[in-house]
Every structure is written in C-alpha cells, then in structure tokens.
Length: 87
Image 1 (tube, helix red, strand yellow):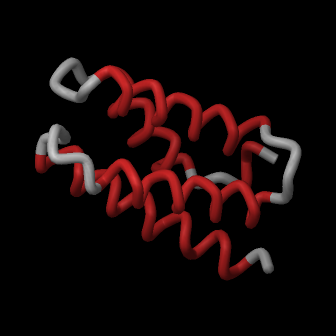
Image 2: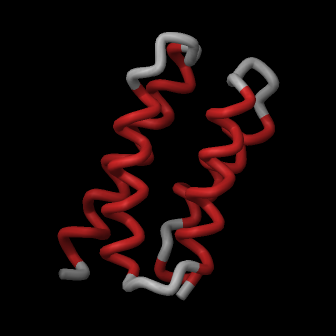
C-alpha cells in the first residue's frame, strides 16, 4: 500500500515534521497524516481525501509560515489526484 502513496508527498510531510519553524501542533498533525497514509485501514482514496480535509483546515492557521502553507497546498493537490484516480 505504501508504494501507492507518492514519495514526494511523504517527503514533504516528513520535512514539515522536522521543521522547527512550524508550530508543534502542525508538526504533529503532519506526522499523523503521514502515518495514516502509510498504514491506514481505509482505501487509499479515502485516506487521501481525509488527509486533504485535514490539510485544508491547518493551512488556514495564521501561525503557519508562508513556505509551509505552500508545501501544504502542494501536498493537497498531489493527494487530490490520488482520490480522483482511485475512485
């Protein structure tokens, strides 16, 4: 299952979790999203849709640095392709 998740998505999520300029709660959420994408029980399309929803919520957080917000938007767009292709 993990091979179906684009490596670039996982790399960006890992980069966010390692970035000390990102608020702790956002790093935790990024880590949880990555874990769910890799090991969740639902189909990949459902896991991607769930991740998109969470990412949209956190991207509106005013405490997120702009470069991280851009990374989140890029990850969301990559995940949208998964949720559309796999349905």
